[in-house]
Length: 120
Image (cartoon, rainbow, N blue to C red):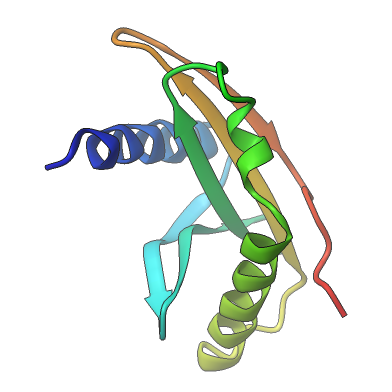
């Protein structure tokens, strides 16, 4: 497995563990449809939560969360819309970002709840 793929996998594992501690029920991981992907789909209280996880080894090129631009947000919204329709879910949706800095032994995690609103 390529090093960046392994880093991403470790970051997603850390994100899932963190979300579970915060009371999220993990519904899907790496859900994809027609070229769209959502890293984590969870339920928390009355919300269905779509989570994008970005993991980096340093902040040399910026914070990991900064790498989620408008294009990626639009793709998440399209994927989430399809997911909600396909699964007939009638709950309010929320879009979260988890940014992780990972070194060989530990990680720093930042959870941005309600990171963006769906584009109209």
